[in-house]
Length: 247
Image (cartoon, rainbow, N blue to C red; front, side):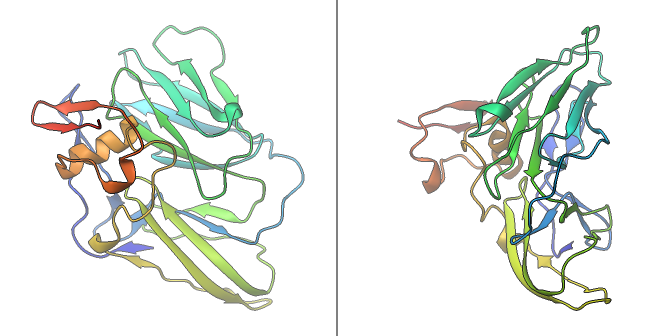
């Protein structure tokens, strides 16, 4: 998985003057944190027993994108001394919640995600620091992967035959569906290339006015609402000179 061309400028982390990448692209163009999954995958029995983690460090969610099975445990942690929370937004009530991750919080901060809408991730944000954004994809099968730092991925035990491979990178709004032919006993190599022209072609998961989209607006310096946001009467002040609004 590669991104050919200059990636979007990072979002400024107001709290400490650092920055948060919109896309994680290495020197060779390898695109990290893209989710790859089969469109025709069959449901698997029972969630895995291993636990996934979503951390907050230097006022950034780590990892930016997480993919889990329905019912799999996700533990939320924070290494920052500042107060944080995790606000999850989804069309499903099972995936809509808020937990406090501030220093000194007592008790396990875990959640087991329920089934999510196809191709739409659960969006995470922090109410206190609006540039912080992450996404969780929830699947009822095992045929998915998240790309590594070099853009590589591997999905095991894919049945032989023709399949549609879905690729999604929510922070950049990247989306691609690729038809692949898998032969028994062989490894199928798939190369997907994105460019700046592909940015933000996919609609956001819930509302375009959530902090995650506010972060994208800050990254690009956009000053007006895109046409697909007109049904969301919300205002988000990003900077004195960058504001999105609706009537």
